[in-house]
Length: 192
Picture 1 (tube, rainbow, N blue to C red):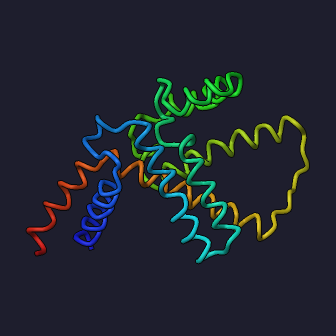
Picture 2: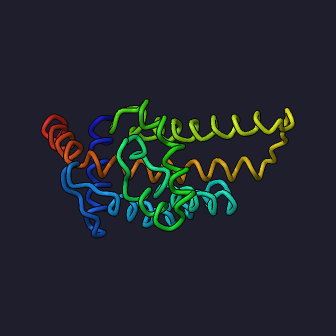
């Protein structure tokens, strides 16, 4: 089992490198490489989700993957990252509000920590953090207690989550590419 996981991760690393994304050490990773990976993965993720769940979920998966450019694991940094500078440059008021929104998250999560960067766990953490803000706004407005969610909305939410998780997984693979290559090499002699 471990051998197959190691080969799969090293194979994904090779695919990313083959398609021109720079994969050096984690110190060499940057926001541009992560954004490019999210954009490149959007269509394949949308097609896969669209075939499995439905076309509406597939379209939402594309959106989730593209949202990964801005709602990414590097929001755990107290410094301003590349995507945040873009928002500030294009829409200054929204950009500074975006920074304020993620400040608490950055103070709670350590950079490249398990809670912020590990696939699925980090995605759930950021989605949950946004949902807490959403619930706070609903409570402040005094909105109705119950909201009906349709099956189509559930499919769309699932598709968007899967797209964001794909983006986060690529981010993690790119940050930890050197370690994964070592894991793959360490596993080969044992099982070959």
